[in-house]
Structure formats: structure tokens, C-alpha cells
Image 1 (cartoon, rainbow, N blue to C red):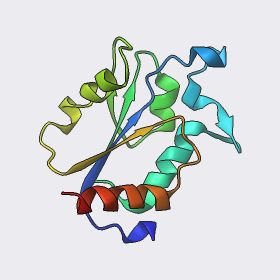
Image 2 (cartoon, helix red, strand yellow):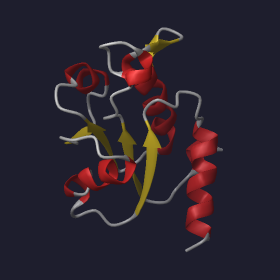
Image 3 (cartoon, rainbow, N blue to C red):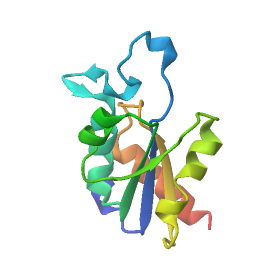
Image 4 (tube, rainbow, N blue to C red):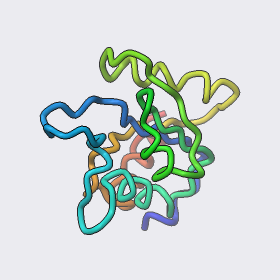
Length: 127
């Protein structure tokens, strides 16, 4: 069960990509699925797992994403230089954090709490 996950972890949600294939000025994670922005689905899947902190990596000017992810911490990726660079941008927000870090894409709305819990359990058993 997803809500039985008891280990300490933080989540980093990557949303800074340009989403050029969407052919829209709207950030990709703000496109709606079932009436909610894609990022809302990802954040809802994290909620039952109780991350100690959630850092959302955004690009400059993503004010709509800031509103949709209210309550999260934010890190800004000034230049989109790939996934590894986006994760590195979250480093300062995790500066004094010790524990597992789960990295997610903000445009993966079908990920479930159960799947995330299994990932975290597998990672903790591999330590």
C-alpha cells in the first residue's frame, strides 16, 4: 500500500522543459487531463507517501506552474540543459537534506502512489 511507506524521502519534480512538441505557449505540465493540469496528477500521487519536501524545478516565467504547485519549494533552471542539469538545479533546495530523493517528471500523470512506493521500497532495500 502506498500510504504504508515509512522511509524518509524528498521528491524532485522536473517541469522546466519547453514542451516544444506541444506547439503551445502553455507549459506542457499545465495542459489538462481529466480536468486537471498534468502536474496536479503527479503531485497527488506523491501526497499519500508524505515526502518530507517536494521541490519543483521550473523554468523562468512559469508562474502558472508555481500556482498549480502551491505549497512546494521551487528551484529555477535558467537554461534548459537536460535532465541532469535540471536535477542539479534542485541541489540548493536540498542542501541540508539527508535521505532518499525521488526524481519524477511533471508530465507523467498516470504514475500511481503504489508505483512510487514500490520504487522507494526497492531503492531502500538496495542500500
